[in-house]
Image (cartoon, rainbow, N blue to C red; front, side):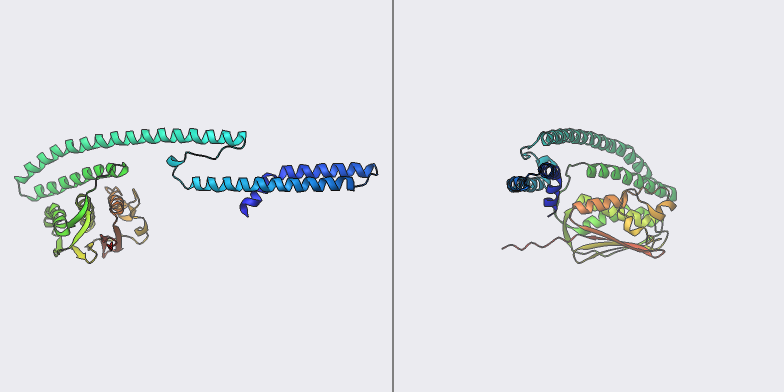
Amino acid sequence: MKFFFGYLFERRRAVIVFIIFSAVFASSFALYGLPLRAVTYPAAICAFIGAAMIAADFFKALRRHRRLGEILKLPAELIENLPEPQSLNERDYQEIVLKLKEEARALELKNELGMAEMTEYYTVWVHQIKTPIASMRLRLQNEDSPLSRRLSSDLFRIEQYVEMVLAYMRLESDSSDYVIKEYPLDPIIRQAIKRFAAEFIDRKISLEYKETDMSAVIDEKWLLFVLEQIISNALKYTRSGSVKITVGEGPVITVSDTGIGIAPEDLPRIFEKGYTGCNGRTDKQASGLGLYLCKRIIDRLGAKISVSSEIDKGTSVSLDLSRPKVTLE
């Protein structure tokens, strides 16, 4: 009905003109004392013919409307065969649409090339900056003092930030860097824990982790990146106490800490890009990218991430790595 009334509204001028002409003829016949039947009879015939023509045109317009509705559901790059234009205005609009589409394609190609160049540059930059970092780490390994341990911890943070840059660039590009298959979870979790071992010892924060024999269909490298970000946040916001890592059925990996927690009003927005919340305003070095990257990666891996927290009691981050079971017939 909406289309029907819209159609009548578009043709309102023709209807109004017909009524006016009929009224003019009727008025002229009345002024000259001529019988009005001479006007009403041809007017009725014209109205009948006009109604038939309008009905035919309406169904033709309805078919075009449905065809355009089907085209509208397609992605922009698949829109090719538009209905034949029925007027000069329609032809002009179609030319405008096609021109805008060509410009959009050119702009998309330009953005893709720019992103590819930027990703390549930062990839080279990451590999170059890793050389002095590795050199500094080798020199610090020859010393064992509170200062050297602290410097090693800070150096590891720098490595994390470098990896975050590379991960961010790869996620923003359309390139895929995933190797999805079944991996045992214990080696991945141990690898993530090992990278923070010095910080756990130096800050006297206890770690609870009991190994399991569970596996998950996941990408090893990206899961390791996500776990490192979560453990890093747990250590960053835990002044004293413990960090606990558990693996439940699903499998579901949960990292819990006894840190300062997250404010209830911040929880709905913690995965937003650049959002740091109350804790970020306290810790001026927070970038608001860690959990954003984790969410993006986990979504791409087909898994789920959730966070629960209480102020001054701690935070728990859960990674649900379960996938729908496929029944083979």
